[in-house]
Image (cartoon, rainbow, N blue to C red; front, side):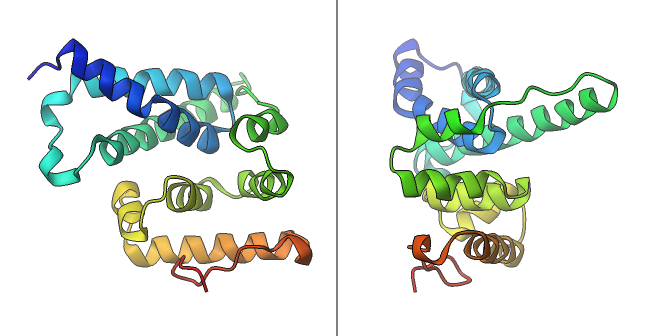
Length: 179
């Protein structure tokens, strides 16, 4: 089934900024995020026939899964290029926070989030930024719920340890819920 031009435009307009920011948080690179965002929609338009709104409710989880998979592929490719002598593109982290966040405390928090490992950063970004439940996050990443909770717990402990006590304005349990 081919996607109609009006439907493609609506899908893009409603989700492009969300997908771009999601990929930006995972890659830390504006240009890579732009490229991957374009690839997400190109793939979504090609495979629109496989999208089942009855199963996912909206296109956002489906597009998020495509975005995460393409981001992982790009990062694997980037590591490979680095190993063969071409260093991957590096973005200025300050510019990322300036785009995504405006509050100074949030900038400090997201600077620390961007310093997390990719696996923990994925969980934090999908759960807190994309506002997915832990089960949705686990499903999207293709990991067990327990692994998702463990990664979130490790990330939050890491952030609590690295942020000054006065800036620890977030308090979440190991399941990601507010305490």
